[in-house]
Image 1: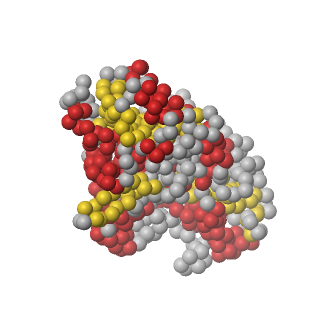
Image 2 (image 1 turned 90 degrees about the vertical axis):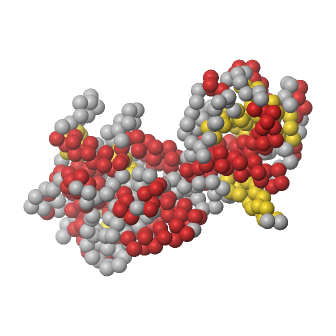
Length: 573
């Protein structure tokens, strides 16, 4: 049987699967997140009543949208379990595919969607579905010389979907007769197309002319470079498609958080986030408290009971209720809630605070300063901790510093191994790049001076670690700052760190959504000792490239606050 059959004729009636799915949602048969419901309500409405928008020029062709569904269910075969059995897509998958491929430009007939973002719980069929879609785009999407790439942060991860596609081909007589598995790719002699795995740690991502790429488990990506390179490699194609699949993860403050925020804005059609070219499908709990409600679990796990084992999920939830560390994994991987990982000092919910206040509110204040000079060749952070009269909140201002040589060094490694998006943070003003190979401590001094002279925010004490202070302390003293040495370690840090943790958990620490501090907080684990029945703690990194300099700088300031609380509070103004 040819792989280029007339797909529309395969069904007596062309079903509108998005409308069928929406009807099931409205009846309560399909339980979905607010974002999923908003997408399907809007897309189904536009089929009958197009939006009044000058950028809208699309029509929905249910028959065109049916093509990948028919192709997958006719030609793609199971490569696990019952080998060779047909793939039967679930309702939510049919609705997704018909939306993605059925919306067309009314003038050119080309696809509307350029990017599909799909976040759903683990073991909900993402990889199998994506492998089948990739084969469709290789064989039957109408693209001449298609280049189809299975991408991920690591090559081993990218090979998972590629290997699934290879196994599907082996189990399908029609696809096996048409496609050739070569050493590192799949070749289609009729379309002159190739499918291959790629990753951030591949030798090169340049020189591609990509028609379709999938990006798997991109929650691990610290920067957007892989996505950017692959997305830009599609510019010469008539109807390129980026297919992003993932669960939530533990890397915070990077590309994933930014892109999911974008997807959520588009899903809810928030002002400033209108984009007709992106299809965002975010299967997640609407609230972490729904973890205890089995009826809500399907919000993050479409196909629960049909694709994913509901009994095993229930067993994982029971274990998570007994084991707080395991709960963070379940929250991230099964329910797509942001997490900081099993070993974190504080949970994601505790450290996340998007509250901001204008700098003018903090002006004309006394503060307590903190600084973690770290190393002259690495990241340095300066902090001001501020209280206001009649206000229970703790306000934090920070500035970070890094030598240019260190920045270039971090950018020289492969994209998937980079520490963080330092250059983007520098462009946003959170990070100062110092010329040369060393942090210029004079720049740190000038930041404190600027906060005094320009904003009248005056630190009564600046708390620092003497180990790396060098000439910096005498210079600060010359400018009139009262410097206080902090002996870093569990004896000094234990009580202030516990007190800071409580304030963060109560969301009383307002850091103006500083992405570097948020990143440092999520990177922080704690080292505990129990001597004479008293627990002492101190911050440690989760791993060598997960910086905590901003947390340590804040903790130094918090030590000063604990040491001088009574005196400091008399200066509030």
